[in-house]
Amino acid sequence: MEPKTRRHVHEESFSATPERLFEILVTPTAICGWWGASRAIVIPETGGIWSASWGDDYDAPDYVSSFVIRTFEPPRRIFFDDAKYYARAGKPPFDARMTTEFVIEPTGDGAILRVIQDGFPCDPIADDFFAACDRGWRDTFAGIRRFLAQ
Image 1 (spheres, helix red, strand yellow):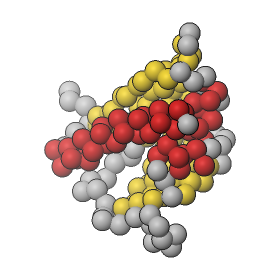
Image 2 (tube, rainbow, N blue to C red):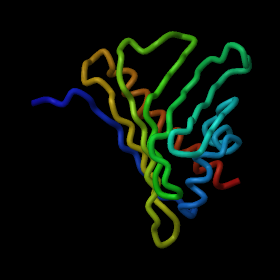
Image 3 (cartoon, rainbow, N blue to C red):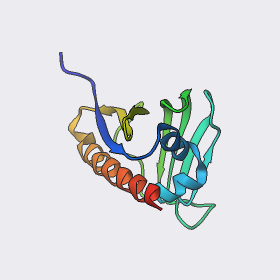
Image 4 (tube, rainbow, N blue to C red):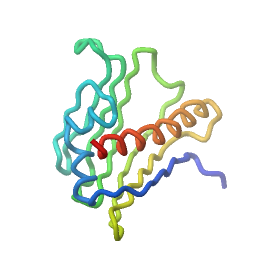
């Protein structure tokens, strides 16, 4: 039987402690720094929220990404559910229940950061969005690397 959804898994090693990596995932000013968001709001707890927006107009953002934090286990894991996406250009051409999970594993000289984004439809109508998210995670991890180097 074919799967109904597909997922991205991207991981990289960083020369930062697990605590530092976790901290930048839940600190609004850090999120703006590594993800280029204009604004971010985080209530860092199980049941809390994680939200970021892009664009110069506070009243009409270009893009918004928002989640409920279902699992909050500093400094090892954070799991987001109930994803809401808004783009001024319009909604994706499909409905999906998307989840995102960050897992941090300590290594001898830092930590591995892994992101698992799940819930992409296997239908070809989602292919462009799926490919864009793959590029997006590579760019996001490059942003995290630049942020940590500051």
